[in-house]
Image (cartoon, rainbow, N blue to C red):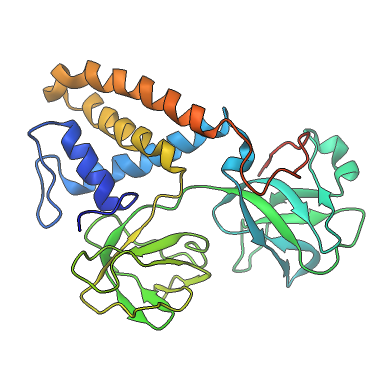
Length: 296
């Protein structure tokens, strides 16, 4: 069993192959340097996310989350920490409240997304503020999030947890509370009986680095390595490693001879990704097509 697609190892390997005979080692500093490559991959993730957002049905990139009431203000509901845009809101009545393109029209929408100004723990957290109605029951929102920073390393595992490495082998661990909620962790140790198992984070505590996931069907061991899976659609993965490769080449002139090859591959990868995503996402057929994304 080889490297799992969508993992940080996968992207590092693809970037290395883009440079032909130049390799990037996981266990030692490679020719290009692992930190430099991972930084380029995380940068490329964000750029590809922005590229897709401006060109495809936004519901393809949105995630439905349950939002909870702000303990300091009962008409505000906290959104996940990585949220930068909101697509729609729903309460238990099954009514979608879509935002308008202008704040002058927000009363027609019934809610507005904004940044919360506070000295409390949720300072600068994005929130949904309800304007002219009281939502009932479970409140959900379709959110757009900044892609989770990719990383991988040795974890410590409980029945339904993974404790992230303070200094992972690839990438870095973000210490912010709730940062990893919604992201997927895969057991990437090829020799493990838990190899390939995926857990979607439902909670994460920054100070302890403990991420809560559904109960593992096979408990990983302390020797097992985890990886954060790429959150972008699979059709866009080639764009990530090609853009990362191009970013490295822009500051290093040793690879001028393959610069044109990568440029041509990027054009093809962009077309392939857009063709794959230019259709409604499953489960979003009932979403209001007039809705704008309220960027916070």
